[in-house]
Length: 140
Image 1 (tube, rainbow, N blue to C red):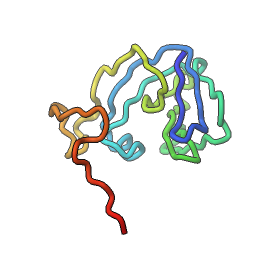
Image 2 (image 1 turned 135 degrees about the vertical axis):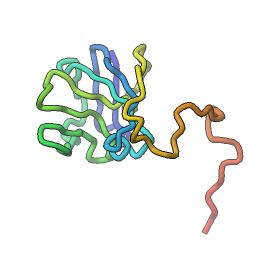
Image 3 (image 1 turned 120 degrees about the vertical axis):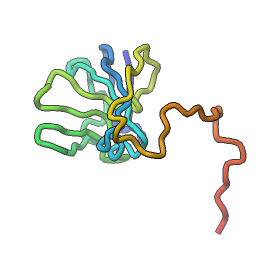
Image 4 (image 1 turned 45 degrees about the horizontal axis):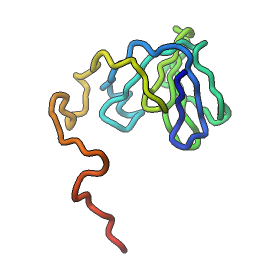
């Protein structure tokens, strides 16, 4: 069983099936809705996902007729997207996952519209926590 939640923890989910077709999506819509360089999404069967807590905290935004993005109204975390043309699946935002999964992303998609400041192949330094010499807030 896979568990997922929003940033504030008000919305919690469990998924009993697998996550399929995982991608890193660089389209402008995913970048805008996530506030990041890309969104990592995967499909789950609608019947495999249960909202275990906070269903009343979910709101949706209908970007196009029949296509909704569902998010926590308290913290704003994107949770999943639904499509009236494909009611059997939901597109889950993998950043909501609370435990490890075996599935892995298959591709980077819509790279023609990727953020110009994001380089796909550049290897940057890795740090276990904050980077060394991180700027500290100045007192006022």
